[in-house]
Amino acid sequence: MDYAIQTRFSDPGVHAGLFDALPDDVTEIAAVVRNLLIHYRGGGIEFTGERLAEIDNRWVSAILATDQKRNGTPLAVPREPVDRVVGCCRDYTLLFVSILRHKGIPARSRVGFGNYFTEGFNNDHVVAEYWNGDRWVMIDAEMDPADPQFTFDVADMPAGPFRSAAEVWQGYRAGELNGDLFGVDTNPDAPLKLHGGWFIRTYVHYQLAHLNGDELLLWDNWGTMSDTLDGADVELTDRIAGLMLASDNGDDAATKEVNDLYRTDPGLTYAGRAFVTSPAGGEFVWKDLG
Picture 1 (cartoon, helix red, strand yellow):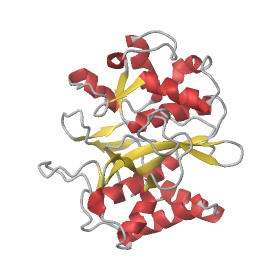
Picture 2: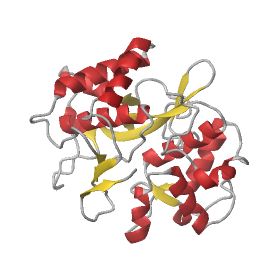
Picture 3: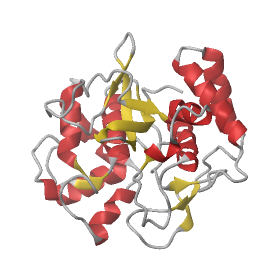
């Protein structure tokens, strides 16, 4: 796909004009994104009710509508943390990608795991990549490059701190990675263990969807996703992961094959309907999302 063109998720809609006044420098764009969003778990403020429900804004147009209703000022005007739109890593990335696409810069989201949040654990995470004319540059738009906790450049990330879901799945399947060290957390009291092999497999499917322009929430579920590996088609996931990794290494045939798989296999393709398990609570049900 053409990563310089907006998707139905990244399209700012009637708010596109807000992007015109933004800087062209990608690190300055990331700073604007951090000015607009606050993480629902990591922002230092506990949100509930309608505010917490902002994490279900799937569309950039909805994120911008929420911001403008609350603040009503240009996007670079400073917002107090409590006035920012509540979201997660996926939202920081999608908004950043949306702005770059508006400026004609190819950009895409990458789904996987980061080892730079919790000692000894790999948290589920979404970062961005943009084409600088020579190569894809990986950037974590949620993180401030000036933060001294980082021992690497979050605006031009090296291999290692973030690993794609496909890479982790291959390591897990080869017995080289402990699946219990990849996920949301290792809370023993949680009703659903949000880590392990099934979780990694789900993120492989998210990675595939995002690369094909369906930049869904990380709690939208469809097709052959499952909270267990029992009965799951792990061989298909093996194939998908292998093809995506080959694609990352410049194999055009692998790129075409895996994208064709996504578009033609009904168990992989997002078709506008998802089983939503939002952290905002409420009933977990199938929803027609468009």
